[in-house]
Length: 188
Ligand SMILES: [Mg+2]
View (cartoon, protein in one colour):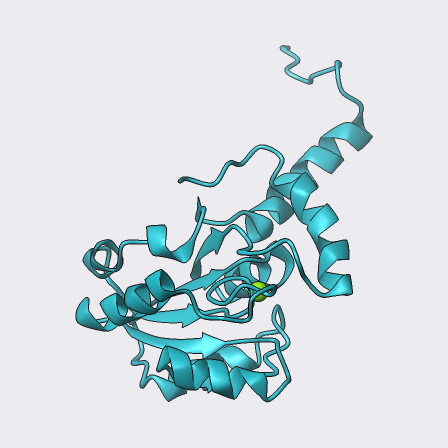
């Protein structure tokens, strides 16, 4: 009788590792880039994606300047040129999101409460999503944007926060994110 048990780790260690492998994919982005402008809309379209759900704060608009950078505005226009339909999906509950949406030129679903799934269908309806169309989510937070998208089975691209300024509770989550992303480096 052969014995393949690994006696170098305890049962508790093995259970912990199994659990980690089940849970970690929810928090692991499919891609990780330094900024949204590094995402190639033509490449997304080529991969079969049709709908893009975009976070706003620190993804498109830095929290320190509150201004839409010109290169980001150009990138948003490239989404449409590539045949992608985009909607803003934000946890922000302030009326400023409507000013951002007007400036960005995209529809918005706000008070989204990501990672909860409820607002995602509203955003998809907004852009006329059809069953079977591939969805990609883009955001700067693991706990809201990555986890929320993966709970629904959507592809998710994480981008580096565009400013170090953030809400106090987001800064708490950032500590957890740094640990989760300790082995990941954003592509330039
Ligand atoms: Mg954000």
